[in-house]
Image (tube, rainbow, N blue to C red; front, side, top):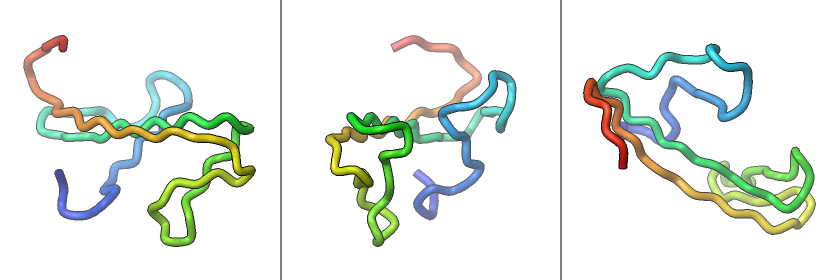
Length: 76
């Protein structure tokens, strides 16, 4: 949705509630969960910086969901 891949601000999917960037009207973040069958730190990007891999050879799944932040609350 932006001009480059993985534009800021970065918002990690872990951490303490109430910290991190505030999502505002007009932002279009991508939610990208990665689930691995290996240890906590098993996920690594391949040398190309893009392709998902695991450091221990475990199975993994990656999905991406693009979400538009609007002034209107809507449930899907």
